[in-house]
Image 1 (cartoon, helix red, strand yellow):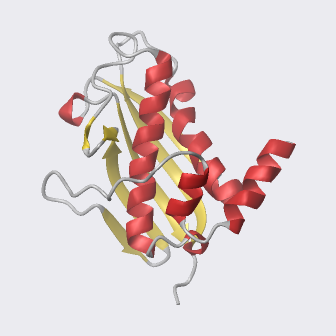
Image 2: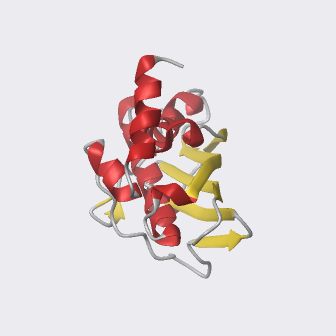
Length: 171
């Protein structure tokens, strides 16, 4: 583990809330998004929290519209992945009462990347989300992941992320 990773892990466990930890990174959580159709934003099954797909948003509106390899640069794609990951974090905060200590581990992220057929840097783009999870949760933020290219996503966004999170026993 590098010293910066160790520092992130130590810092991640010292904050008491997810939103405070995110704020310490210079970012902010928006209110958890309401479902756009006939589904729920998350389902708790035992100690596993399944989070529905979160699209990239800014100020409550769909953001980073377009496709990688076309109208969205790799840098903006990585930023879009981080924005979608912030949506995932908002849902985790909503499900846990914003308690960092309730998250035992980020188990899995599935990152959908709207891209042209010849685009092949999906994993690099998805690191925008993965890096944020590790920054927030330290070692507990390390997860399995898929990064999948798709033709289009809801509202024309470039990134959508769904997650599975293991929670600790609640109080």
